[in-house]
Length: 143
Image 1: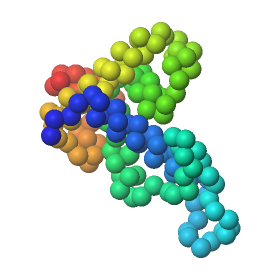
Image 2: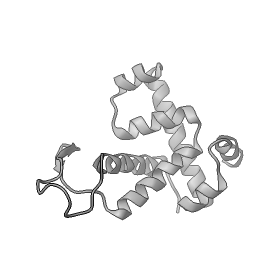
Image 3: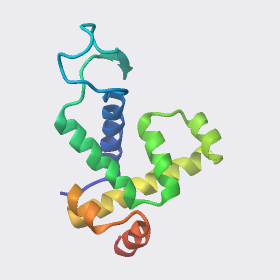
Image 4: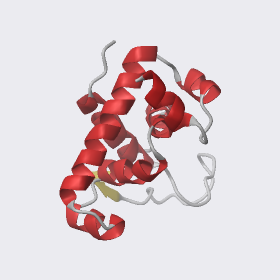
């Protein structure tokens, strides 16, 4: 399968949406606790009462592991972009112009897409083959 930067961006955005839907605080088994519905959280303009499915969580975790493939200072930029942060907030947070943020996002998505196309790696292979310390050097040598 040939991965593109847009496909990577969409998967990271999907992972951010799944993370927002995950329950926070103490997680109890079904049937324990209150009979009131779970807390309503607005997601993309809609009210969502459902928790993410195990498949959605697995796909989100896989996409989050891809962030290990890029430079550490770019990981937070890509994640904030996936969360839907506004450009002005990101400019102030990272101290760079929006065009620099866009270039970093674009390059990060491209590096991830190239690596995924090149290896067709699964999450287990990704975690086994890379440690967080030397991931950037190995990735850039092969891409």
